[in-house]
Image (cartoon, rainbow, N blue to C red):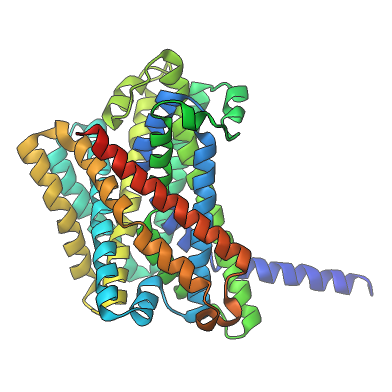
Length: 429
């Protein structure tokens, strides 16, 4: 009996720590959806159909960089109590702050546009709804889902977690049906110089990197992690930082599975059969439906796409409100900001669909990614710089090796994005 007491104490301590960790679970899933949005689908499908499994290591590298950036978001909030937008407003001049706000808001609208179109395409695939009306339905139903925040963020986080698991389950079933060659799949995680020698591979690889790190997620995560009780002592806050990082890393693991799964699926179904030019989401569904010996594969593809688009538009609209309040101190009613963000993305979508027809939607998706790429550095740079500032961060300043990795990751995502933009304009001239 005397020896059981210490064991019982350790068990109680572990249970207490686990319960506290569960209190931090949720924000990571809200953030992870930005890493499995329709923009990622396009690059993953293109990479798999054109180059097989060869770019799997690029997805892994991109996901590791995403984990690092989200950890820095957690560190910033725990140390300062500020989100990235608020910290930029306090640290930079009003002119610079307004410029950063404009870049962030433009990126959110571009991202929202891609997710809105992704959901509209899924509705067309599943129910035959024209894209014009599908875009309107998507714009309205996301506002309804966001109304759940009135019940508390836990409800919204639970909904998003269910949608994330739905996406992962749909991709998982399709992979079982596709039966990829495991030996070739494993080789795809080994970096090679092939990416520098094969025509077009570098461009697709850079597109994957540029489409993975979503700048609105940096603003979103650095804000919502502050909704958790972080404690008052340094020990409690360090524990909060650790648990919040566990949460985002776990959620981003699901995002990695989805992105890698899409590339593997595209490789197993399209590349192996010689269909190396599949980049259009609707074309991918058409070819996939029945290619695996079951029509359920195409349906699961569309369901996962719908869940992906819905998820990402929810978090994108939330990020718009955080950016507006953080940079400009505008405390408008949440629904006003959300409606404005929705309309800003809905207008160009309906204009292109109405005037140019549904065939030009893919071009609009590509342009949204170009806009995102152009302003990505305006979110990564301040985050890495501020988390490495000992005067601002105090005892929670990022270790030197973390800051170095942050600068290297920033250089990579910004360089990839700029190269993507240059390549886009070169191929369209």
